[in-house]
Length: 305
Ligand code: UD1
Image (cartoon, rainbow, N blue to C red):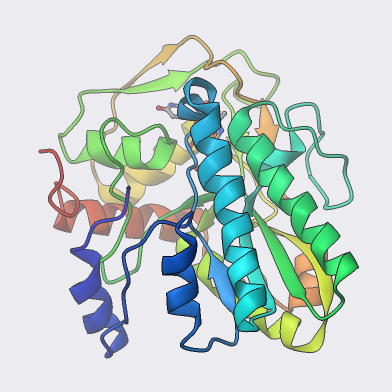
C-alpha cells in the first residue's frame, strides 16, 4: 500500500468534512460489495499499482490488482446498480513509438506489464459499455501528474527511493537524497533530456470532476487525455524547480533508463472540447506546490526518514 492514514485528518480539515473511509482490498468481492451496497451514483477508480520496474518483476501481481481488481469492482457495481465509472488510465498505453502530441485515436502499444494492465482494463471497459448500454464509463489517460495541494498538507510520499522525477527532485532539495540522476542527455530532444507533459494534480483532480459531468450527459465509453499539451525536458524541470524553491538541485547525467521514451505530450483537443476542461496550472505552480509540500513535510507523512 502506498497511501498513508495520516492523510485522512488532513483531508477532513481541507474539506471541512470527515471523509468516510474503508480500508479494503480491491480484489475482495464481499468487502467491495458491502461498501457499494450503501448506494452510490458513481465510482472513481484509482486503486492500482503503477511502478513500471515492479510490474516487470511481478507481472502476476500487477494483473491481479489492476485487472482482476477492476473485474471484481465492475461485478459488484453491476450487482448493486452503479453504472457510472471513471477509470485512471495512463499515457503509457501509447507506448514508445508514438509521435507526440498523442491523440486518443493513436494505436496503443504498451511496452511493460503495467501499461498492458492499463490497456487490458480499457478494453474490458469498452467491451462492457458496448454490451450493456446503460453503462457510462470514462478512461482518463494521465500524462505525468506532479505537484501537491497548494496548502502543502497533502502531497506525494513515495515508499522508498522515488522512481519518478518530481518526488526525487524535492527529496534532493530537502536534503533526503544527495543528487539527482538525469537519465540520459542524448535523446533527440532540444536539450537531449527526456520531455514529458507534467500536469498539476489539482488540474488532474478537476479533470475527474469534468469527466463525471460529461458522463451525466453521455452514456457509453470514452477515452480522454489529461495533460497540458506542453512538454518540458528534465533540465527545464530542474531549472523551474530551482527557481520556485530557491534551492539548488545538484545532478549527474547518467545512462538512459531502460524503457524511457524521448518525448511524450498530450493532444488536449478532445478533453477541451468534450469535457470543457483544460489544465490551468503551469510548471512554476507545479514546482512551487511540490516544494511547499516537501518543505513542510520533509519526511512525507512520516515514512522512512
Ligand atoms: C513513469 C512510467 C509511466 C507511469 C508513470 C507513473 C516509466 C518508463 N514510465 O513515467 O509508465 O505511468 O511513471 O507516474 O517508468 N528521470 C530522470 N531521473 C529520475 C527520474 C526520472 O532523469 O530520477 C527522467 C525520465 O528519464 C523521464 C522524466 O524524468 O524523461 C520523467 O520520468 P518519470 O517521472 O519517471 O515519469 P515517466 O517515465 O514519464
